[in-house]
Image 1 (cartoon, rainbow, N blue to C red):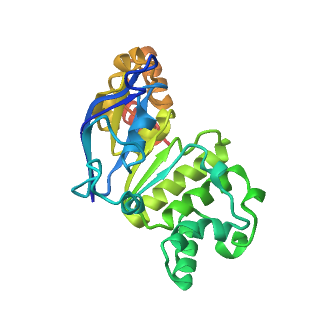
Image 2 (cartoon, rainbow, N blue to C red; image 1 turned 60 degrees about the vertical axis):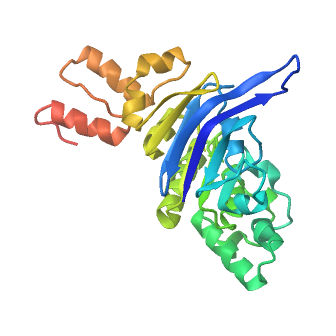
Length: 286
């Protein structure tokens, strides 16, 4: 499975006074099993880009290929593409509507005509992947759950379709620290268990650094930068000029290095920072 985007351009309200170029010649590829993080200031084109990847938006120009198949030429059944490419919007819990958790997660598979026994298996598997127990909450109302649990149920509904690509728009937005950690752990579990492509947008640079294999930086409707988290976040001045921060650990280690020159570090996570400090300070013990 792969996704290839070629010279993608999208214009809102073309020919109107409010005409806006949301994407401008965007090109990139995502390969099987990769986790791609996308960052950028508000209005840079991130969410518009996501909505092209499963055909929710048709580009003004350019192409999107999913597993070698062009989904932007009007010749494919987009319903089939959306089974392969699952998109989870920001605050997906607002889209829960069924009377029980099990029915909500089963909604997609049931609409495909799948047998009831297979639907239940999918629902159980999807809930397990997001860290929820079918026997405990399957018959509960989704509206009685915590915010973090509601979000996981909404994501389970997408996973029950068995997608090859999972796209998440701000998956940790608005959650308390505990629920935030649970969602990050859930994303890692999904990736390890299913081995699928995961593409996610986040304003939390720590999340981007800890989860991503590769990072794309959007600015003014274009890709301004692309590379590994280490490569992208080494350009702190360029990111600042685009209104973006580096991960908190990177920022702290830069401040430490300014005061203690012997401690030089490009760490992005606390574990990396601890290892750099141990190496820099003889006799330092964890």
